[in-house]
Every structure is written in structure tokens, then in C-alpha cells.
Length: 480
Ligand SMILES: Cc1cc2nc3c(=O)[nH]c(=O)nc-3n(C[C@H](O)[C@H](O)[C@H](O)COP(=O)(O)OP(=O)(O)OC[C@H]3O[C@@H](n4cnc5c(N)ncnc54)[C@H](O)[C@@H]3O)c2cc1C
Picture 1 (tube, rainbow, N blue to C red):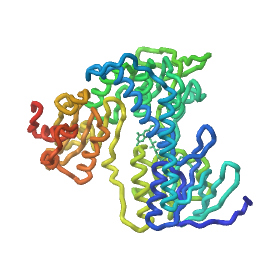
Picture 2: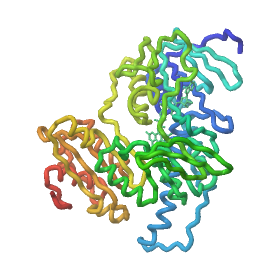
Picture 3: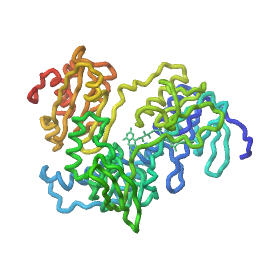
């Protein structure tokens, strides 16, 4: 292509086809706008794929492995309780990883199909915003294509944070993407960071047989979760065999042969241990490298986030930004809602995101999910509150499933019965939280849940009973 190629014109150009960008593109097309979406994601073999971190290296492959590894462990440890005798449960990691890769391929391929069906033009290559709402797309061969857009939506996502003292090499010292693609179970695995990603990856490899040590700098475990839930979670993770060291700061790591020596400091002094692989899972940072040419006027803050208002509009007219690259939790569903909101606002329709009601899920066993405020946040806010809990050990369905660990906890306002937060640790918590989100989105009171019929026997009855317990009216457990 020449250096001054002809411009193609669109109503909307989206840069990034992750869970924030591709829904923005699809909704904009549904709104009868002419749309293009540009994405630069390349797999190890050089192939391009839509879907961003979530589909290629995050939510979907991690859940595929969490499911497989959980089944493996249950077959080994739990099936006998059901009267199912297996003489020899064997792991075939090649097949497990093949299944993970096939799911990713199907899902990312699905976005191509959705783009086609909705009339979105997909470009594979690097997108750069230039002043005047021009986007330059550079393909793998270096050829440039210049497109003009009435509106540009920036959805470039995030990348893992790396530690200077722990030099990444992709083989021994790895990030979350590498850790999803191990071709052998490491005998000893170190994980730096006891956040959501660290705990999920640690669980996968522990279930498959690794000795797992998780190093966390903070003294508190899962500080973003309700502390009653976090305490229960820590107990179960220790039972699984995760060696979680809190208040431990990694000071360095060195590879020697096929061993990684990890050094850390805690209140008792300096320590060291050796592992076969070390995963750095200390968080993610917005990715805006090469995204903005000089003079666009888009503002990036000191931490690398693109500055936006509550409607994801940047400081520049008709330039929007959504997903992990803007403030708020780095979650796929938060990005998706932002993408859809922006596409609707561009089309002149009313749309907003209720940032107070964004669910969080940790796909460990037991699963953890919550929405709204934690008890510690409610307490700090000073509003009088009441709490109801219900243990899964009292749920008939949980007993039938042999999954009785955990509880549901509901926090409600004393004055008007408003639900302030719902916290679940237990089987299918990530599915159960849907009801809680809907209730809070519709400003339900605790009484509304109390008066809603829940099918029997289901796990959702635990939510019903926890709501009853808020007013000491639980039927299936003792009210305290
Ligand atoms: C291991 C792991 C597990 C996770 N599990 C969950 C989970 O269970 N649930 C959940 O909600 N979240 C989960 N997340 C987080 C989730 O993946 C992110 O919140 C989500 O992907 C963010 O979406 P996004 O569209 O903003 O960015 P991304 O998914 O990162 O997508 C951005 C896309 O834009 C492309 N891009 C960037 N810059 C340019 C450019 N200049 N030109 C062209 N293309 C560009 C990138 O290559 C990428 O394809 C997980 C993350 C990880 C790492």
C-alpha cells in the first residue's frame, strides 16, 4: 500500500476486539451504523484472532482448565462417595490442553461469524488513532490502511504487570498466558500474587498434582472480598493444599538450569525456595502502546488508564474508551456493558452502566461470587445493617451434589431493607450471583427475595434462606 492510501469511511471504528471492543462493534452495527473493528492479537504461531485477552488467554481458557482439573480431582477423590469405583484415574494433559485450545478456537472463530452476520468489517493489524478521527491500520506485512471514522472507540485492553526483580523469560518465569499452556504438570509451581488469576491458576495446577506455593505481599487475604467469605476461602484453599504465604514480598528470582530460586521477605526475615515454574500474577495494566499518535488530545493518566467520564467519553469529541484500559474493575462483563453503552450513545439512544452492581467471581472450588458492598465497607459507611447467612451444608441440592462447602451472606439496610451486598462461597456461586445482581439492579428489598418462590431442591434456595435469615426467619437453618 502507498504511504498516502485512500481513506475508507465508517461511522464507527473500534480499536480492539476483546470483550469490550467486539460488543461495541456489534451493537453499533445493530444500530445501523457502518462499523469496522481492528485487532492486533497474534497467537504464538503468528495467526491473528479476535476476542482479546478474555477469549485467547484469559476467561475462557482458564475456565476450560478449571473445569477439566476439577473433574479430574473429583474423579479421584469424590466419585467413591457416590458409589462409583474407578480403579485408575489417569491424567492425559495433552488431551486436556487440546480441549482448551479447541474451545478457544471455536469461541474466537465465533466472533468472525458474528462480525460477518452483523456487517462489521474486521481488520487484523495494529490500529493507531491520529488527530481528526483517522485510524491507521498496519498489517503484519507493514502495509498501512487509513480509515476515517465519525466516532472512534478505543478498547485496547490490558497486559500483565511484570516485576523487575523477577525477569520474565516465558519458559521458567512466566505470565498467566504461558501458565495456561504448560505441556507438562510442573512438580513444583510458584505463584506470585494471591489475586483472582493467581488463585485460579494455582488451583488448576494443584489439582493436577503440582506442589503450589503462592506468595502474596499483602497481609490480608482477598481484601476486596467480604472478610467472612475470604476467611472461609482461605480454609478451603489450604485444604486443597495451596501453600499461601501472606505478608511475603518477593525480592528476586533466578533461573539456574531448570530450577527457579525464589527469594522473599516476610516478618520473620528472608527466605528462599525452589520451583520448576514461577508464575507472576501481580495484576494487569492498561495497554496503550502505539495506540495514540501525537496530537490526538486523548488523555492518559499517570497509571496508564485512558481518562473518560461516566459514559466512557474521552476529552476529545467522538472519541470513546472502554474496558480494561479505563477506570473500574478489569472484568470482561464490565467492558462489555461499557462497549454496548457507548455504541448506543453514539446512535443517540439512552444508555448507562450501573457501576454499583458489577458482579465479581473467582472460579475456584468452592467458587466465590459477590455483588455490592462487603460488610467491612457497609460498616465503614456507618449505615445500620442486618446480616443473614445460610450454609450450603443445610441445602438438600448441595448435599446431593456432594458440594456442601460454603455459605450465602446477605447484608441489608436496617432502615429500608435495601439489599447492600450479597456474597456467596460455594457450588456454582458464579451462576447463583445472577439472581443477586438482578435483585440489586431492580433495587429489590430483602423482603422481595423472601417472597420470591425458589424451586426445590436447588442451590438458589440458599439465597432465599439467607434472605429469610436476615430477619431471623430462615426455615431450614437455626436463626441466631
Ligand atoms: C488468566 C485470566 C483469567 C481471566 N478470567 C476472567 C474471568 O473469568 N472473568 C472476567 O470477567 N475477566 C477475566 N479476566 C479479565 C478479562 O480477560 C479482561 O477484563 C478483559 O479481557 C478485558 O477486555 P478488553 O476488551 O478491555 O481488553 P482485552 O481482552 O485485553 O482486548 C483488547 C484487544 O485489543 C487489542 N489491541 C490493543 N491495542 C491495539 C491496537 N493499538 N490496535 C489493534 N488492536 C489492539 C489487543 O491485542 C486485544 O486483542 C481474566 C484475565 C486473565 C489474564
